[in-house]
Image (tube, rainbow, N blue to C red; front, side, top):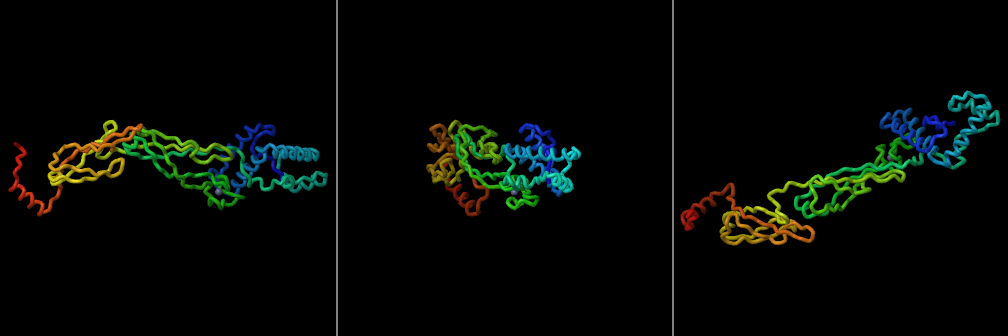
Length: 327
Ligand SMILES: [Zn+2]
């Protein structure tokens, strides 16, 4: 069966490659089974559009096709066929044979070893989509810079059906008709010191894959700086209040708290007062080869619920207490 690929793409014969591409894109969007539905008619039409573009976008195949098309037109005109391009019916083919114009479109391409034109790729380069995601960091990481490991689900257009969802008019087995495939990719994202909340970091080329030599999309990460809990910063120093029990304040204790360097233990001396400050050297924010300290403020807290035994001990303490804190 002969097809007029120019008519299918609704363009004149001497269209430029840009015009061919533009016509193809317009029609491919309009007739994509996602948009137009997956009825047999739509799939046939979509297939036909892709087939037309497959041939007309390839310089060599287009030249072959143009030659064949003119030859075919000449055969028709010689027979004084109607010029309105109607797909060749068997009757016409037979007539052409009788006239010695034996021409079979499929044989023509088969001879060129270009069977199954539709199964080949459409060659138009397409840029991959950009991907947007979020990364949450602490205020310390924002101040000092950090490296975050993130896993991104990356979707790419199915390499088998090239996103068409169909192969030879049946559901693509590779992507199960989804038109795309997904894989996780791990990134070590370097976050610079002093980054501001809602800043975006762009990882060029880490978005979705481009098609046919088209550039990959980019990955954009929006940085969210987590509100600090029980911490304040002052330059490179981190200020933190640490609750201690009354007996710890009186007797002294060893206390462990989380810092940017991991858990750090420090001692509070016997008879530590409320509001007393302890400097943990080098446990602050690291920035440009400088490091701050963590400054811990002791806050003596009474447990919210005391056992009867504890209350009895406090009563005993009241009896024996020598300290006069209000004098
Ligand atoms: Zn597929």
